Image (cartoon, rainbow, N blue to C red):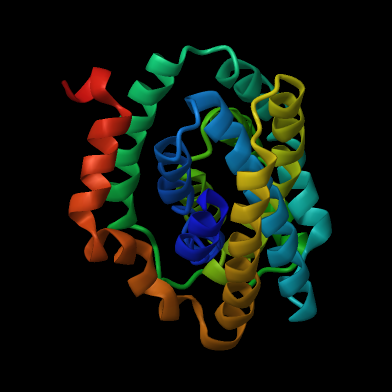
Length: 257
């Protein structure tokens, strides 16, 4: 029943993660709500993240939207941080993880209201990108650490770096983002697996729904534009805000009481 719940209720989280980066704002608390401890929920969530980003990359490639060389150069800088972040995540106590999660959820929900959806950047060649990326690399180490540690809202951080610092069009921002997240998620996932912090049944169920959402969202973003999806960024919180905030207060009693 838990697996069915995950598939039915979190399919469009693949869309949120692929386009806005807020999908883990829903999936990670949902996994804790289903009874997983913080570290296991964190690790289980990585299965879906890894598989859904494969689906998104393949979808972008099918639409001939890719710059694999540049994406890989950006992603490599996240790897050391992701490994350190994941190692910290499996060692932190469940109580402290839930405190941190509660704080992060609040800031991520607020940041959704100020995402650069619908704004235009530039479509640059890989040669042009080289001139703009050198100062971006150090910040990607911290992206890797945060992504390896908790993941929630990482898409918004990457959007800030790729859009505001590199001035890329949001279509390219999302294309690079899914590749970067895929690369650093692999070592992070392996660390969670090694430490036994993965529920494969729930993770694969979540991945099935997320991959479906990521696949069609990538295609539609190419054909219809990013602005089409603005309403989805906050739709889960518009539709059931009371449930969402009740869940946060339940997940993080040390912080909210």
